[in-house]
Length: 270
Image (tube, rainbow, N blue to C red; front, side):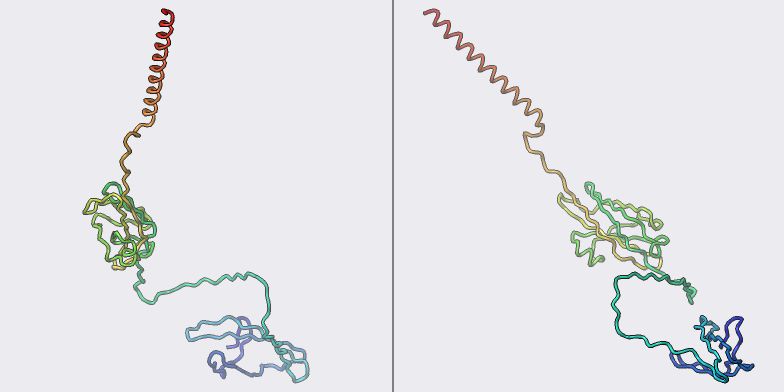
């Protein structure tokens, strides 16, 4: 329908819109004679089955210059198809906002987001884990449960989480997304010196949707070796050495003095 708000309406009852991209044409007479020198402006809007209306088209104009002849606008000049060389430039475009409406009554669900800051520490035979709590849906809400597994093999735990050794998490109650989580436990065997263990976590929501496997945290048990004998207290050992040297020096000096005195006395007696 050729109408713009406050513009004069053109009867388009005889115009049947064609498929998008087709050429459309329409001719009509106005309800009054067009005087020489008159300039008229035209615009179009289109409408779909849901009564949604397009934006107003470009404004076309036509002028009656000669008696009985309507002179249309000149055609656009041809555009060169040769590629143009341009330098560096930046173009910024700001998009319009939009609203997404869901047709179903049940909103979609998403699994908890992946834990990315899992850390592990060994103290004697106790394992200490800490991480940031994920959500019920991504980083919103509270997850239902955690599944913690460990392994001696880093690649196995990364590529096949379900084959790792399970940690009992019955005592772990997930907190709201973004909270600090901590869990400590003992393994079923004593951890030997020099052992390295790897840990990973997955979380689950009320719809049993499981998150991706967390980052792999590792912890090693390294005990200090025994101290070398005789160097337990270097300061004391140095003191003993100094005193010993002094005592030996004094003894030597005493022997030399006694020997000198004895020789002099013998010479005097002769």
